Length: 436
Image 1 (cartoon, rainbow, N blue to C red):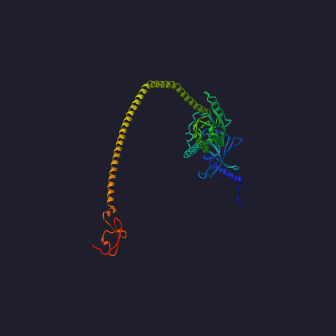
Image 2 (tube, one colour; image 1 turned 30 degrees about the vertical axis):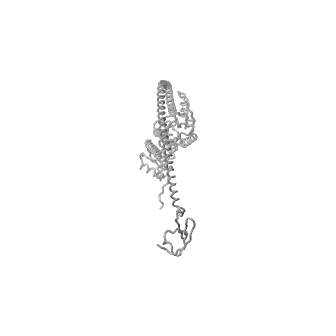
Image 3 (cartoon, rainbow, N blue to C red; image 1 turned 90 degrees about the vertical axis):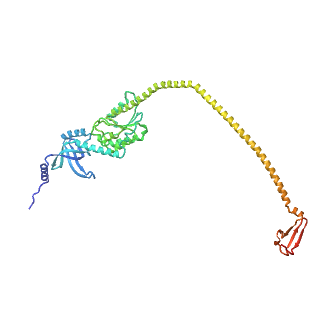
C-alpha cells in the first residue's frame, strides 16, 4: 500500500506553522555578530553566533535580518549610545522574532537592541586590557615621563586629510604669543580595522628618530564615535604605554575614555585642545623664564649693593685686621726667637758637658793604660823569674824521660834511660835504683 508523502514545500510549511505557533512572541537574545552586511536596499543581513568561552568553538549559529526601516533607526541609536560601530565581532542583546521560510529556512528578525549590554561587554574588555597591562607593570609608564622643558618638536599621528589635523596645526602655528613649534605628520588610518596597525607603524617610525622629537600627539577629528573601537586594543595600548616620549591623545570624543586615553600621558578632548595644551605649557615656561628674568633684573642691583656694602665693611676692617695679623706674627717671631735662643743655650751646655765627659774619658783611659803597662811589666818579671833557664842557672836541673819532665820517682823503673838537663849541657843516665 502506497504511503502518503509530503512535498518539501509542504513539510517546510508545517515547520513554519509550528514555529509560529510555538514561538509567537518577541525574545531577547544574547549573541555575537558575524558577517554583518547591508545591501543596496538598506536591509542588513547578518549572522548570530555563540562560542564556547574557553575553547572559542562554535556552539550555535542563526541567520538574522534587520529590515531597512528598523536598521535605519537601530544602527545610529546603537552607535551613538555605545561609541562602537555596528560590526562583526561585538556582543549584542537584541530583541528578535523567530521565523522560518520554506526557501530560506530558519532566521531571526531583529526588532530592537539594548546598547547597555554591549557597553558592559566593551567595559569588561577594557578592564581586562588594563588589568593585563597593570600585571605587566607598564600601565602608567608613559604617565610617569616628564615633559621636556621646551616642548616644541611635535610628532603628530593622524590622517593627512583629517580636518582635526588642520585645526591642530592652525591653532599651534597661529598662537597669540608667537611661540615656534616644529610639527611633522606621521600618517595613519584613524577609523576602521586598520587603526591599530597603522598607528603602531607610525610609532615605530617616530622611534627610529626619537632624538628629533619632544612629544607625540595622536589626534582625529570629525569621525563618528562608532569608530573608536580601534583605540581599545591591547597591542596599541601596550606600545603607547611603553613609548619613551610623552603621548598626548585628542581623538575627538568627550563621554568615554578609550584604553589608549587611559595609558597615554595626557588626554584632551579634541585636536584643538591638544594644541592649546602644548601652547599652555609653552606659556608656563615663558612665564617662568620671565619670572627668572624679573628676578635677575631686580636681584642683580640688590645683590651688587649688598656686595658693595660687604666689600666696604671689609675695606674698613682691613687695616685693623692687618695690624692684628702683624702683631700676631711679631709675637710669633719673638716667641720663636726666644725658643731658638733657649734651644741653642741648652744645646751649648749639652755639648760642653759632652766635651768634659770626653776629657775625663781621655784621662781615665790614660790612667788605665799606665796601670795595665805596670801590671804587664810585673808579669813579665814573674815570667822571666820562673823561666827554666833562670832556674837552671841557679843550680837546678830537669830530668826528662822520653822528652817529658819527671816530677815523681814512681814514674821511673830500674833500667830506664833518662836525660838530665843542666844550665850548661845534658847528661844521659840509666836508672839503677829507685828510692822513695
